[in-house]
Image 1 (cartoon, rainbow, N blue to C red):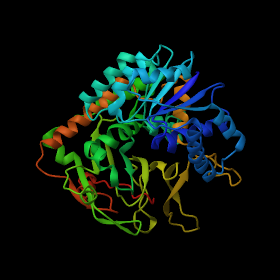
Image 2 (cartoon, rainbow, N blue to C red):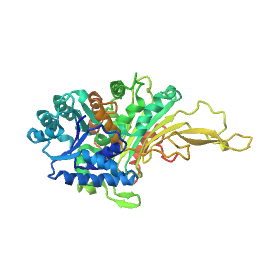
Image 3 (spheres, rainbow, N blue to C red):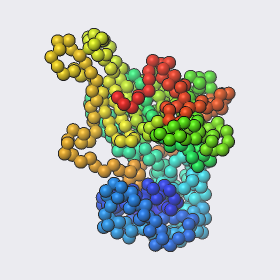
Image 4 (tube, rainbow, N blue to C red):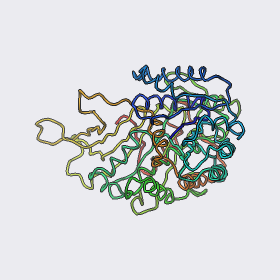
Length: 486
């Protein structure tokens, strides 16, 4: 691989995530020898000015992680270059092709997806879409199935499917990948991973931040398209997919597509029973009074900032097991987790009373704020009491938790793994076209069901876990959301 081109190389994503990720890869000696890193953006600035901005961003992040090394930066600085371009113009891109040279090029489009079609068309005309080249696309691609297909058809005119890497940074998280190891590398979990042992699954992505000045984007997408269509459905697929035959990229992605095809459609007449949409109003988060969404926007809006959905997977493994997903802005805490709630024991030989009620086992896969995998089990309380008393204990399955002298590895930026895989051509953790189409198809059905409803999103005060209807979604089935403090 001769070059990595970052379109939008001076923007927020590049400066905050991509370039620091590349620095950490450089520090660990993982970048290919001779790789050029070329920033490409509209801003008229010299290479020296661009490198200075990159250093400021990278050094701030690296020093916060106690990972700054002058020699690593010197190596990365030698790779860096910059060119001011209009990425939608083939004529403007030809000098960029000259900088890339004759070797293979990976282009990361860290720009608005609305520009993808025009950019890839210009890239093809400028010679940046040759058979050995690759393109990385950041989500969301389109806002529904039709717009996704329009954009992706343009991409397909320039690049074959094996050259296209549709990125979802959640798949680069260490704990998400560890879910595959947990399921398929251990005999104790997979035999229980079905409707005979599992009662239900919860997926939560909570954010304390509001929309703020991003409301023009958010008004177009909302929580459903911004979070559930990609991040949450990807996590659902990894939990629910069948064991692939091997770790070949298509073997894994074939199984994920099967899950998406098995999702039960949500009809308009049942939307109110199995979905909840909400919008935050003024409230308190982290001790501070914050505005509601309409106040930030300056006008009334029906855009949802919170969504909760019950999804059912109609196949043999998961028949009868509900998957509950919720995500929202201005929630009480930043938390991303997957909860596997097992069924209770079929019959208790222990009296309830003062011996303690038996709690069903629960596996919690936490992604934010800290990455952790824990399993709750019932255990005898220590002591000589002749009447056996039980208590739940939480066992951590994470690296180094039981070694007091172990120093856990640096928490990697999710983009590190994904950039490395894109450069090496490994598409396992990237989204295939038919996978994205199936996700959009299901989400469009939810959106259409909402469109036929008269009700607006339910209000919820900032700093709460969404509207009361989100709790009722589980309450009516005799279940409750995980509190996060178990």
